[in-house]
Image 1: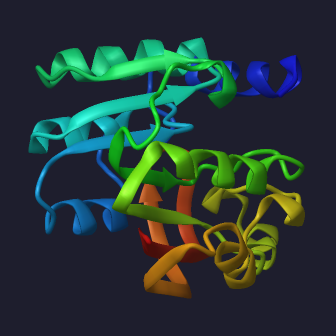
Image 2 (image 1 turned 180 degrees about the horizontal axis):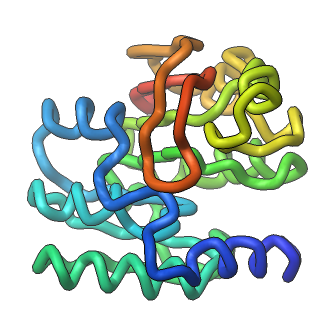
Amino acid sequence: MNDTWTNRWNDRYSKEEFAYGVAPNNYLKEQLENLNTGTILFPAEGEGRNAVFAAKLGWTVSAFDISPQGKNKALLLAGTNKVTIDYQVGELQTLNYNPEQFDIIALIYAHFPANIKSVYHKALDKYLRRGGLVIFEAFSKKHIEYNSKNEKVGGPKEVDMLFSIDEIKSDFDNYEIIELVEKEIELNEGLFHNGIGSVIRFVGRKK
């Protein structure tokens, strides 16, 4: 990922207010509250709202992002909530995670650049134990239409950065599909996710 990409996120996370709020994503919250705690990884975790929520539930939390500003905000939020998270800055291939280290990988609006998004999904797989879960929510390709009507709902403006059900099936082809749907939802997450949008939701168990 290039400096322009990093600078974009550093700029977004440099403000005092949390870009996507401090409350967890609703879909992630629903999933985690029904699971036994264990080890969980949050790629592209930004300012830490989901990682901190998981830590408060008792999960052992790891997270990473390319933005040092995101890490700063995440550690601030963790401190406020009196929890600990292991947060690293860098791209996946530079980090020191171990094979099958995690029980859960949570991809919540982890919109990687189009040319690497499937590569990242397949690379992350090796860090998930057999029987572990991927929990995923991100904007679908249809979301371009929603964003064009209401920019406040957020999301990438490049359709190739968005997801389809077929892409998720291909990226996670060695998973039992527990849920895989495209649906319209209303978002109310901080400054940048507000309004009606179209998302892909996926929970899969590694075979």
